[in-house]
Image 1 (cartoon, rainbow, N blue to C red):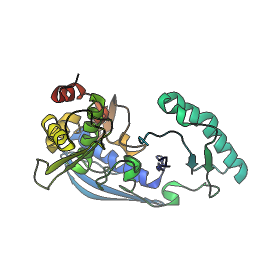
Image 2 (cartoon, rainbow, N blue to C red):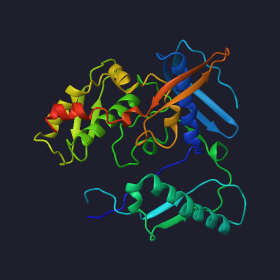
Image 3 (cartoon, rainbow, N blue to C red):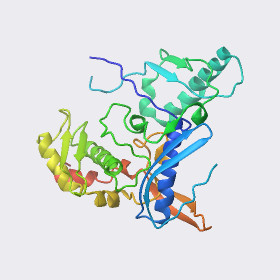
Length: 310
């Protein structure tokens, strides 16, 4: 049966994402100077004020400065609430933004993601700043807090979420690292031909490295002669899900988190970049790091071999 599915996204200027970006920038700076840093930090932003709280154990010092097959067939409606300069009347402002979206933004999206181009059509309904002018925004317009956009950060409500936020947490926290690891597993299972769709869930107990359990649901799309429980046991034999080994496999002890703090942690393009960091004592270091390693299909051959697939 056809149905409409709705997902929300926010841009980098949303106060909650500003808070996430600050928290993850702190993570990156600590990891840049001490890869073994333990960090759990929260940020609150509001008009003229930034509040930081949390726990840090690190050799580094940081001076905080003030400054039906479930395949979509079409897009039914697009809602855009975006901050803008006070440049014209409300009607002309809305028409200008709508024109920019239709003539500039959507063609760019269709060009970059060609497989989704067919979802766009002339019948799409547009709701542009439906409440009117949106001149005051960001922390000046609303309070932001780390970890309040966890669904925006992941699957837009389509996939399950463990409930723990990512931003502000070093990779020893499985809220973050295990979510990346299960994403990595799911992508490689599908790419290897084990199934067409899969949910991978893992659970932990504090102080115990080995997972309490690994659960797999292929929603009836498995292409191998195994039930989901057997697939889960095979996953455990291929992927070491102890936190330390997740960190090593996905290179999570690097300053790679600022880039995750806006526009989603999942579905991003893996890439190698060089980042520069400065310490309060004047020391500057450059680090070459790999971003979004959990999106790589680097275990496909291992998965195929384990499942006997060609």
